Amino acid sequence: MRINRLAVAAVAVVPLAVLALAGCRDSRTATTSADGTPQVKIMVGGINKVIYLPAMLTQQLGYFKDAGVDVQLSDEPSGASAENTLVAGQVQGVVGFYDHTITLQAQGKCIKSVAQLAKVPGEAEVVSNQATGLTSAKDFAGKKLGVTSPGSSTDYLTQYLATKNGVPVKDYTTVKAGAGSTFIASLTNGGIDGGMTTDPTIAKITSKKLGKVLIDLRTEEGTKAALGGLYPASSLYMDCAYVDANKDTVGKVAGAFVKTMKWISTHSAAEVADKMPADYAGDDKALYVQSIKDSSPMFTTDGVMPAGGPETVLDVLGTFSDTVKANKSKIDLTKTYTTEFTKSGQ
Image (cartoon, rainbow, N blue to C red; front, side, top):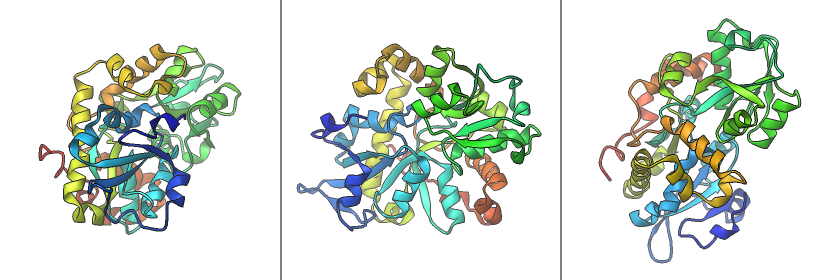
């Protein structure tokens, strides 16, 4: 990703290495810029993925600056790694999957979603045109299935789909396929028969006829059919102690995201694409617009957690995450998210 042209923006994108070298100060401690503006570092679990589009779009629209907060966005392709940076105190927030808040609570840590960006995963199980006998999740047995990384949200969702359709997890092979070009390479060279991924990767695969969508978790309809309910995914989550100690700052950041979600709901995919950095579309702007259009149904319009969503996520994790399974009865879902900042109208 080319990021040097953004260096002078009000909200800068900085690599993880810069954050690590910035000093030993724990970023869960509130900081301000020279003019007294609150500073917030947010790690995004794949900043150019459509599922996390609201983070960069909020910057591009100028809503962080309008809210009076200096936000630094940084990129970490793996959601699990992004989570680790928050726990280590290198950042104050993460734009990643809500399910990490549940997993971390099972480990004795309090993390909560303060703005819910998506009500469904925004992902799809795609299968290679070369794969034979793979027409539904019932056919997962004996297949090589790609996930972002073991223990990731894509991994747990794949396990859930398999088991729900009568295929034990041990009967298929899990392959770390990453995302983007690495995922596409695995799909085309036989490294995987199918796998769970997001747009714009999905759009590239289908447009080039390298594969097809088998199970679509980008829409409410598809998600309910596959998982039995809504599965809130991309969100802005933060350490509970930081949230409690910095409500004014958190309210400003969450409020900026809410403005963005409303903006997305009232503008076309082409208009959204036009606001994003030009290099996000690569050499095919039309394909990027299509990927936004295909995935936009996943977004909330108000940043509020959808009713019943946390229960679905807990059901999935409580079945396949050993950590959550061992502590499922102790999980307090009310501590994994808050609507205080999104329902307040800030």
